[in-house]
Length: 317
Image (cartoon, rainbow, N blue to C red):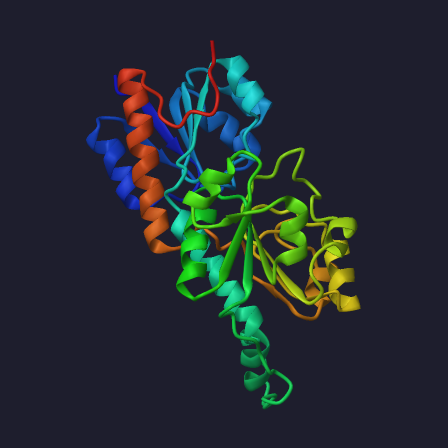
C-alpha cells in the first residue's frame, strides 16, 4: 500500500507530480480548519506545508503515521519542533530555494523608498502631480547595511554592489573572513546601525532577534536612514518604528512582514508616512514557488524511501 502525502498549503504542480511519480498517494487539501486537519492527518506519512498550516502539538498528537513534515520554504515559526521531535517526526525545510526572490524584493523596496514610487503612483491615480514634493535620492555610493549574511543576505550584497552601493554586514555566526567572502565589509552591530544609509534585515526570528529593532536601537541608526524588513515580523518593534518615522529620525521604512498578519485595521503601520508595505511577498514569485515545491518533494521522497533526511532541523531519537 502506497504511503500517503498530505499537502495542506498551496504547492506548485511540479512538486505534486514528483510525489505521484515516486509512487505516493497524494491528497491536496488546503484551507482546512484545525479540527479538519486533525482528521485529515490520520494515516499520513508526510505532511507538506508552507506558512499557513500550524503544526501544533495537538495536530502531532492526532497523527498516527506521520514520519516527516516538509516546509516548502525556509521559515518554521508555524511548527512546534520540540513536539515533533518528541513524536519522532522529522522536520525539514528548503533553504536557499527562494533566496533570490527575497533578495530582489529587498532591493525593490530600497528603490521604492528612494524614489517615492508608491506615493507617486498613488498620487497620479488620485489626480495629483507631486513632482516637486517627491524629490528622491540615488542609491549609488550609499552604504547598504545587511544584518544576516546567509543565502538572502549574500545575494543582496551582490545586488547592492551591482548598483554601486558600499556594502557592510554583520552576522554573529560568520567570521569576518566569511562575511568578506560574501561580499560585505564586516562590522559590529553597533557600527551597522551607525553607518547604514539603508539597513536590510535578513535573520530568522529567534528569542535574540525578537524586538531587536527597539526604540533604543532605532535611535542608534544613522539620521535619515531607511530600514527594510523582508525577514520576519516581530524583529522590528512596529510602534517604535512609527515613532522614529514621525520624528524624522528615519527617512523611510519598508516592511514585507509584520507582528500580526494580515495587519489589523487599527495598526499604526497603515497610517505612517514614508512607510512602504507589501503583504509578505518575499518568496512569492513563480520561480521561487516552483523551486521550493520541487525541493520539498524530492527531499521528502528521499527520506520516506531511504531514511536520508536532507535539511532536517531536528533529530528525533
